[in-house]
Length: 385
Figure 1 (spheres, rainbow, N blue to C red):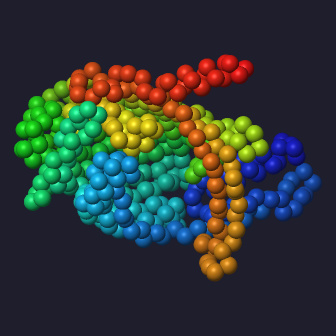
Figure 2: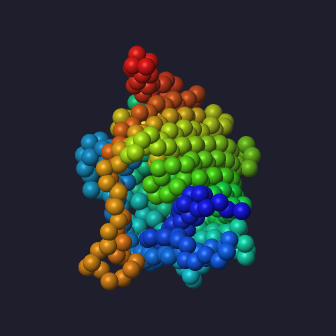
């Protein structure tokens, strides 16, 4: 039995669940009529446009500062192309993605996702494949900076991957994903000569199966920009089958983020994530710590911190300046008329540690980074309190 006092919270939760499908610009839930102790609900949705032909122009470097300062705004380090994305293929929320990219990295990719195979909508499947080539590679890390080698005539590295995965969702917030991929990586002889550890032992190729399992618990209110709830993810990877394979590695990555409200317009988040991987002697190409993708420490944008294990702590404080939705009178299609706009001021406090037991060229490994700021804030809080 649902109590009237709980209706607003229930409506908000269900509205967010529909909105988080990413199929609608706006969602409203309201009571249309009462019949004794039963209520008739009316859910209004405003569909968004599902088909996006998207041009590609992006920097290949890890962040803008690295490209602007370290590589002196070199336009050869850009990537351009075109991708076609259909978010509601066949009208069943299936996602089809085709990508064609040139420039620093030549990439061709196809991805097809079927979210629901069964009538209960709990099991889905996806297929993907890509082929990637480069004429420049980061052949080693020295002093926590990547060093690159370029060949203007031929590709130095090529990568081919094809795979499939199956996803099971026991409920709206949680999912299990099990995937298998087949990977072929190849480098030119010269790369293996200047860094025999690139694939280890002077190898010029890696051919291996890749198994991965991911568990996700997503209890955030609005996934594109959450303010309440939490997000947890665990990922296990196994590259290769045995010590006789071209590569034999396993890793475990885990991350947790908690979002909370501090006042009327004040919000905060706390995040901790990290990875452990084995064995300690790993190929340079497959070993990454901080400075890659979303695992980076603010204030160290110009550096990479390689290692077999790492941990990262993040906190953020946000203040809401503006949060509105308005209709664009110049556009007639409902898919384009609603324009949400939210502006927040944000500040960060972070710390990290990277453990490197094999390579000894990087002074930022094997020490706490950013911890001094945490200590100062803690001391200031104790004095004030």
